[in-house]
Image (cartoon, rainbow, N blue to C red; front, side, top):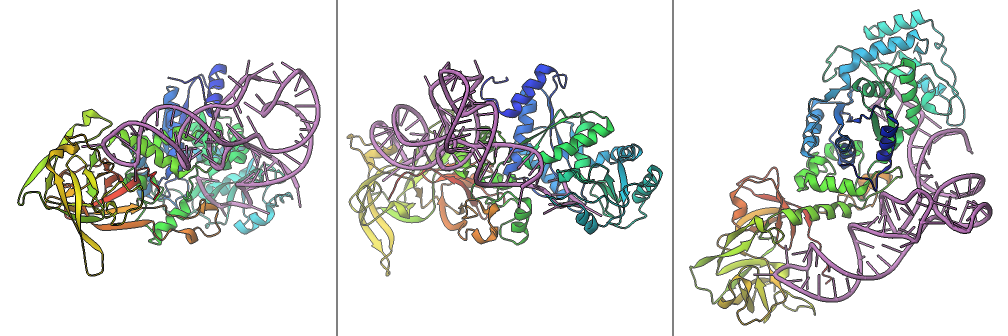
Length: 550
RNA sequence: UGGGGCGUCGUCUAAUGGUAGGACACCGGGUUUUGGUCCCGGCAGUUGGGGUUCGAGUCCCUACGCCCCAGCCA
């Protein structure tokens, strides 16, 4: 199961650990989201990394909610996060963990810190702490409360817990080094007072642990071996290590890797939240959102995302992945697995004048040319059909393979047709075509060996179902909107194009389905989660590759 | 200018000190009942300068560039 080549640096570290027996050859990872928003594609990288590594080494991976800040966190997010991880295909089994379940333990560990004389209760305000922290170039100033007695610290800390003090009036701080070149080591806050309702512990606590204190303890309590996190935590590692060493408890290894960035995409939860709250998108799962739920609604498959993460790799340098690579990954997956259907987005009526009136027939259509086991279906054909507006041109350029006056094309799976008359409205707009068909070309093959260059998709006007089809473009026009001064400025005003008069083949109205189809020649589409029988809505996940240059 | 990281094709990512490879993108050509897929081919890279070595992307020195850190957020 374990590959021997092209191992990324984390796998190499684990291989080394297993050779030296550092963690008794165990591998236990965790995915530790804070439930303060929906998961996005960047989280998916962390999810895949952690769960895949556990699986590869025969270890385990916990899903752990890092719910140490009641102000930002909500139940809805713990629900959606579980749904998204599950959808990606990962199973945490019975290892659903919450940092809040360890609050009692964390509190006693804090008492232990106080007992060891390396933590103190500080009365400085947030502003005063900021003032005395120093700068990047100058050391900070020690708190006047730094040398309180252990007894006093203990008493005060207990009273903090018991609700005697107001928010912000006191903190518990670690006693490390106010002159430390690493800002994180300048007597960091361990606990703060927050009289707030927690979504799980309700009103039990009014003191809450800070990330650096909590996270290492969570890892330690759960027996995590390799604690994977992103690069910005690199200079938190000394503190992570310091806490665990002071306590003398089991000590996991933190390893940092570069988070995923996508071109033309924002990955900041804060900014995504702003899009939702300002109504710029249709919720967290808007198909244009880089959230996992957005990609799901857009028509992405879990497999395509996992394959993408495999290709992206794991390293330590900052990166911006080309979103085209994600799209390519989807196409590759769906080309092999999705059934084809006929749909016309911008219908142009074609009357086949030599086809019998009041008559119709069925033609046989392969569901997937890449997969014979997908079988075939029957599609109704009749005298009046719709083709795509852009598949006809009255005055075509040189290499136009589609329909034009006098030219012959194939209607896929049906017949060859030739265009004889162009009907226009009062504005000169083409509204209808009169064509003739060759009845000896049924199925799309000529009996005399003559060939046509163009093959068009179509639907029978008599049998077609109306639907709305939504085409999406990137939400942002800037390659890296996250680094722009104002990300809202580069919002693409044309990121959604809703087409209301589309005609789709009847089979698309019949079943309920949640897997994408390929609409012949157009791309991959999925029925929108809010679609109904009365108003059918399809989302285009991604267009087919188009190398035709007009 | 303190500390922590990172520099390989346009974008990602590989390479016990031994021919710099792959993917995406892009550009050609072939096949094709999707201008899709598939197949074949092409383009293109080690941040600069020194040093060690028979040999350096890899080791050493140096310069430069980029990212992160001064929340009682995570």
